[in-house]
Length: 335
Ligand code: PHB
Ligand code: FE
Image 1 (cartoon, rainbow, N blue to C red):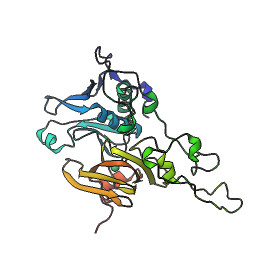
Image 2: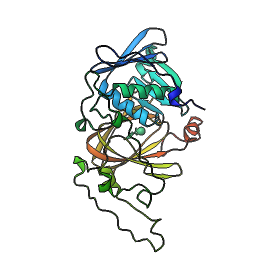
Image 3: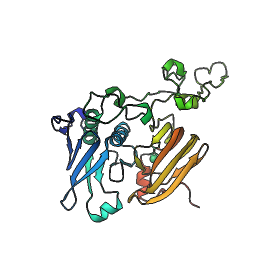
Image 4: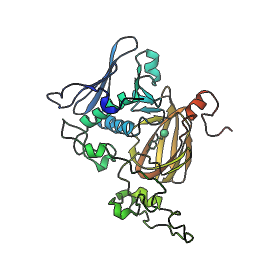
């Protein structure tokens, strides 16, 4: 059994006297932040010191998702250099290992950690480095600045809990999606989304078992961006709709095929080889389009205006091993 998170030691320094932020160490990697940047340092495979710099807003948006999604499916690249790869009981953290040029030069480093250990370190860093007024899940136009010296905290925004349903949402005793009562206002970009509810005529006696809700109305009130929610779960088929604005803060390298259904507006995707980062495709998705991302690619989306996207995942815990053994394909269809 993994140790509970609060028993896992997080290695950090005292707050910096000028900037106010703590620095963190995980394995051979160290992390510090200043007013504008996250700085990551490590010793390369052949023993030379190397560092990498990321805009702190981009770093925190990626870190937020890696923490909230429990390291997600497969690879979460914060950018072309740094990221994590989920093995579901342990997590690889790397710099340069999925960057063809750095790998060829031998300046990459990958280390594996028990999930609880990397989780505790990432959560502590996210908490210490996220200032009051900055919400890493919010669209850039809807939140304050990530920059500057240490200024309070943003606990409420970074510890948002998922709303959990125990049966079909909206049914008696479960989540109330009659959205006005939830106090979630319609987003400015979705002012034209109808807020009516489906008409329901269950047979007498089935009123508590049959239900439907307006998914577009539900999504129009989402407070967050690039954060898929499990809205229906049928065996391992997970329908995960989400609202997107600006840039997906990670380059996702899935360990399985994943489907996208663009429900309104548009998203532009950059797809690349997941091992090297070599560009593979541009995918421009407009309302009504569907696409499948093969398991060998990494992908990052750009949504010029807040849009609705349905992410369809096969959540089978065996799939990744079936693909490794060649029993399941890396592509959705073979022509
Ligand atoms: C993805 O990596 O496929 C992904 C992640 C978050 C989203 C949408 C897509 O909101
Ligand atoms: Fe993905």
